[in-house]
Length: 102
Picture 1 (cartoon, rainbow, N blue to C red):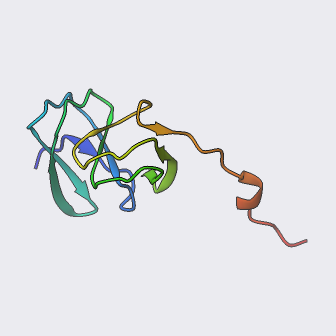
Picture 2: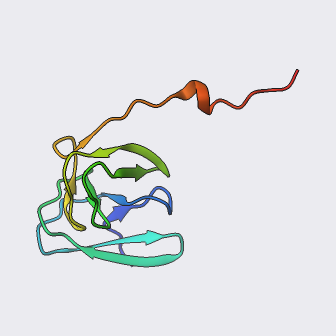
Picture 3: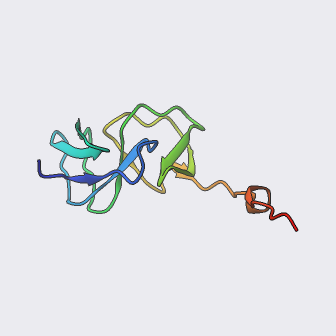
């Protein structure tokens, strides 16, 4: 299968398109060993993200298995995910650090 998008982690709810995708085209990607596809509902520029599931307003967007932001408004599966519809959420890296025992 020729892939059109990359999934960085199986927990992700977006994939990154490795080619320009036009609305109505099928986007193929892999989730682990499973071959998957989604139909683009709008044009997705090269190297931009497409939503794999319907996302509600203020829902976490995951890429690399990590939160990369939250939605500003609902985003339908198959639609573009970019700076116009998500916002960054500062992380508390201090609380995420693993403490070494002395």
